[in-house]
Length: 96
Image 1: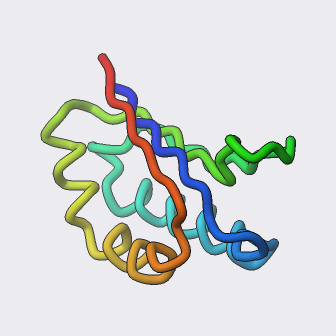
Image 2: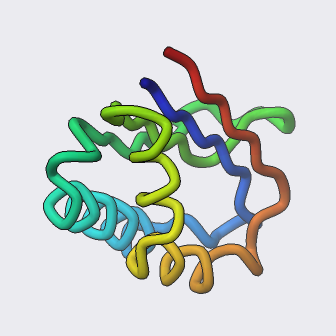
């Protein structure tokens, strides 16, 4: 299954350090759950428009059970605690 998350963070929050943090955290998640997370990418938006999101996370997961394992993993919870206070908008999309 595919799992997409799009977030708009407050201006200036998703700098190079934050982008590195996201990439390293999601790569660590992939390594921590290799049977569950088949692939992951973190992408930064490159066009500045009011409706655009700041960052997109795209994951390939084994199945819906894998999604629940990923969502409750301490690395995922931790990155949420670091950045959720700065999220202005968020959307997720899951599909087979």
